[in-house]
Image 1 (cartoon, rainbow, N blue to C red):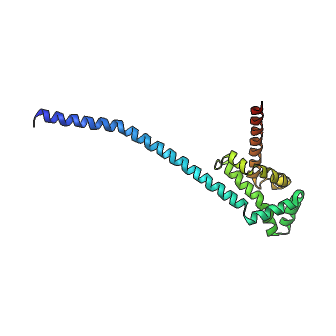
Image 2 (spheres, one colour):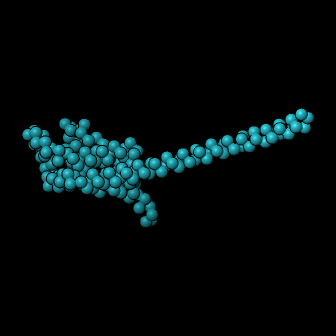
Length: 174
């Protein structure tokens, strides 16, 4: 072998090494960008599934029956709930608390960041306001303060979101 043959091989190794040094960060960056895109797509898919599940739950026959009962009791909801609790009327108790539990579960999803506040407000904002008014005396009573804490948290978040949207609307109008 001549010295010419060895230097040709070393030159080829230098080229391959240089290409690998340049290509490695590019490939890693492309992999990171692809993984980020996949994470965003998975989050959107999970959000869609969550919205479908919440809407299905809200439209279920059991929930429709519970909403009807809660609406019928109206301002007497606290007394009706306490009567059902005292008499161990499980069906009535469950029916009366089901709507509050729904909003409590929705509050968990929003407060913990699993569902965007704006989306939740668009879907359930006015409805939550109506049912919070019906449940307010019950869930804010000292003896029930541990019940449905995320329903109360959701209400606070929705009140802030409503105020924010009103402010933005006023700014756009002026």
